[in-house]
Image (cartoon, rainbow, N blue to C red; front, side):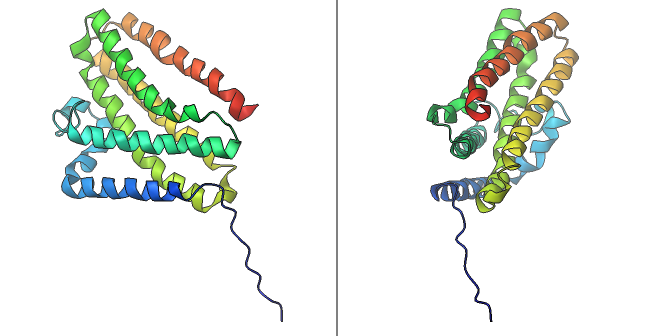
Length: 217
């Protein structure tokens, strides 16, 4: 009779990540229980003008409590995502965990500067809200993907690419929707082109050139 030998699971990531993600799920669950309408309407912002979504003017405004709870969740989850990528690719640049948070504040600042210099700040209100909705959604969607990766390290060939695609896809949808919203709000087309070229495309390329040697080289 053959003996059954237990094989130890390869622990790729530290255990504290699981507890951090469980805490994040608990906070989101409490928020969903108390304000279920926020999650019911969150997806609507990708198909309708964000300012027309019932909760957007209060809870999801920049200074709204719900907005900041979901933003902090995004900062935590995205930071953990970058940390796991650093561990997997054996990259020692721990400062990279702040890149997703820095990118969000950069986008907010870029929209504010673009709106102020062009005199179209009021017309960009929906774009600020859409940025928040996109960020909230990424922070929620990435949680189950990270759990799958932690529990199934053998899938490490595919999950880093999946996380990257999720992040890029959400922001691609945001950029496309932002263009249509700006045009609908009668923002001049050359402002849109200048914004895309100066404040969207080159920063992404700069970050890619900065980060890629550590992950690809």
